Image (tube, rainbow, N blue to C red; front, side, top):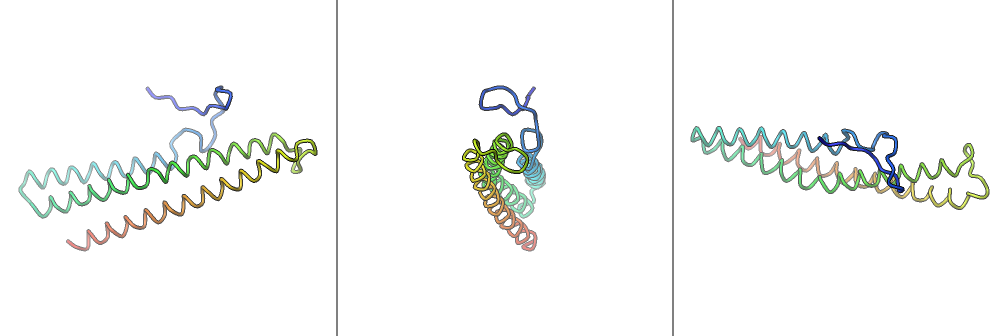
Length: 150
């Protein structure tokens, strides 16, 4: 049985929050694509068993496209997840060094440093999300071309 939890820098478990464990975008997209690969593999197997060469080739191309998308999107999902985690940690540091909405004078340097980190990671996450959208659009178009070729 698998147990997921977030660990702090000190190695102690931290309270779970959005983006920390659970069933997020990474798992959802991976699950969706895995289901599509499995369905296409079943189609390919059934077509092969019935001797339908054209249906087999079509289904096998679907398997290939979904597998390629899974492989291409995985590192992008890792980028998003890692940037999200680092951004969240930076925002926790900001909160820890803030009094209300203004940084305390003695912690102002730390607060400003963590604000820069949070902004950098926010932009990294946005960039990786943009790359993922392009990847998804690429495979959406490839699947559309495949369907239209029938």
